[in-house]
Image (cartoon, rainbow, N blue to C red; front, top):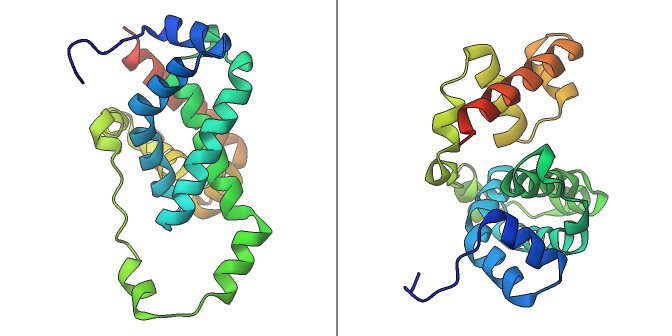
Length: 181
């Protein structure tokens, strides 16, 4: 970033976004798109579709910025939730499901399996998750990095849904405490 480039505090950025300032939106995209794209790629392996979802995410952020509440969490956390939900919604959509069923199996399909690497280490998120208790760590990994729903995690790990919800909540509270300035 050049020395004379504008830098916003989180509060300033949110205020300018709520005032619909284009420069603030450009700043938001420049500074957060890479991290959000990594989250999308951890859930959706198709890069072209991931780009579409990223665009959709930023449109949602722009349209829903008025709903952001700083007392409930950081801006980045709010944007990550929008990103994760949009990615999972895309996977669950009928259009995506039909596309996957009708896709021709070519060598590139086999080559692309497992080739997506997540860049969550760049933001230090994975390191923080690995400091959690093993029970919490596995749930956060499945829910936030691999895109499983709580119900799917419950069935996968053969533990009650209520236990999954309680442990995930406790894990997120613990993460919040770790990240607090």
